[in-house]
Structures are given as C-alpha cells and as structure tokens.
Amino acid sequence: MPPNLASEGGYSWIVLADKGALDAEQRAMNTAVTQNDDGASPAQYFSLRDKSGTPHVIVEVRDHGLAECYGRNDKRYPGRDHVPSIKALIQQHDWFVGIAAQHCEIISVTDPRRGGKNYDALHPPPRMTVPDSLDLFRCHRVTDLPRDYLSVDGSLDIRGTQIKRLPRKMRVEDYISTDIGLFQSVKEARAAFAAKYPEQQPSPRPPSANKSARKPKKHHL
Image (cartoon, rainbow, N blue to C red; front, side, top):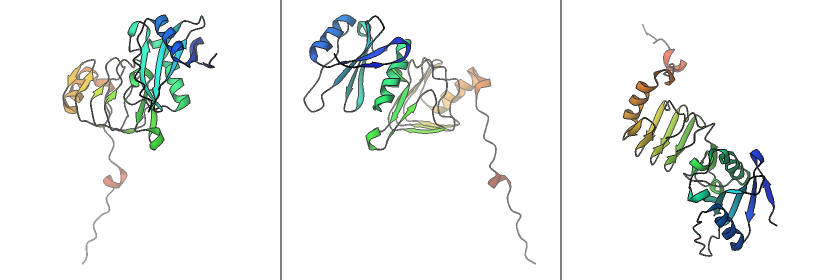
C-alpha cells in the first residue's frame, strides 16, 4: 500500500502508484484525468482522502511542478476545505505551481530549482515581480497584494478574493479582472477601487528624510 501523507482537517494524501490505482480513483470521483505521459516527463498522482477513505482531489505532478488539479465530478477548482491540504503538500515538496495559485494560494516566481521562490499568497512580500500572469481567482482567503510594488507581465485576476486595495505602485501588461469590473489599465482599476473602497486605499508615502532635509547652499563671499 502506498504511504499516507497526513494533512489538515482529518485528510490524508495517498500516492497513486500505478495506472490501476489512478483509474480506480477516477471512477470513485467521477472525473477524467488527462494522461499525456510521453516517457520524457512521467507524471505522479496524489489523491486527497477523508477519514472514511472517500477521495476528493487528485493532483498531477510533472517536472517538479503542479501540472493539474482535479476535483470531484470533473471540477477544476477543489472545494475551499481542500485548499489548505493542497497548499501544505506543495510546500512540503517545494513544487513549482506557475499560475495555478487558485488551487493552492501559492505564487511561484520562476522555477525554484533555478533560483526562484514560492510565495504564500496569504502573506505576500512588499514587492513582487511576476514574469507571467497572476491568477488568484477564487482564492477567497487572500486579502492583500504586495503593499509597495507589483509587476505582472501578463494579466491579473483577483476575482473571488477579499482584496480591496491595490499596491502603491503597480504595472500589469494585460487586463485586470476584479469583482467590481474588468479593466484594461492600472489607472482605470485604481480609480474604481478608490471609488468603491475609499477607506481601504493606502496612504501616500511620506517624503524621505534625504529629500525633505536638504542641506543649505553655501554662499561664497
């Protein structure tokens, strides 16, 4: 029997060691897992089960990264109760997750094996540069983006989050999807957020001491 990996809330992860185990899990969950093994990068599969042994989520891991996440009845977004378990599994193995943050509340910036880093979307750093799209769709526990600076080379999706303010400085190459509208520019999004959530907007930075305390000019006689 494959080893069980204990998780939160009474759940545990089961390693699906062969095709027979994967097929049985798919039938139990009424879901279809796309299997595209070409021999070069074989996939691993893990199933999240509750105390009674009922499966709820299958995750596919390939090339040290989370390739796909399957819920019951062919859903691609697991239930809210399952997100902490998925997140814990990824953090335990330091998997790369790309833009799949909606599954696990983790943002991967480049590949961890090449000097990148995984960030917890619940506690983002003050500054962040994302060389791809940033997809936080349905991350209902996420309340903030990086406080001071965020640069996104693709689109930004924060629908279904609790985010009510944008970073002090922000650059988004493509569109911005939010619960209050779809915006084509940061300027449009910032104006809409200021009108919708005026109390939540960040206060402007105070001038730095170096700029405000200038040395008096010397006058030569």
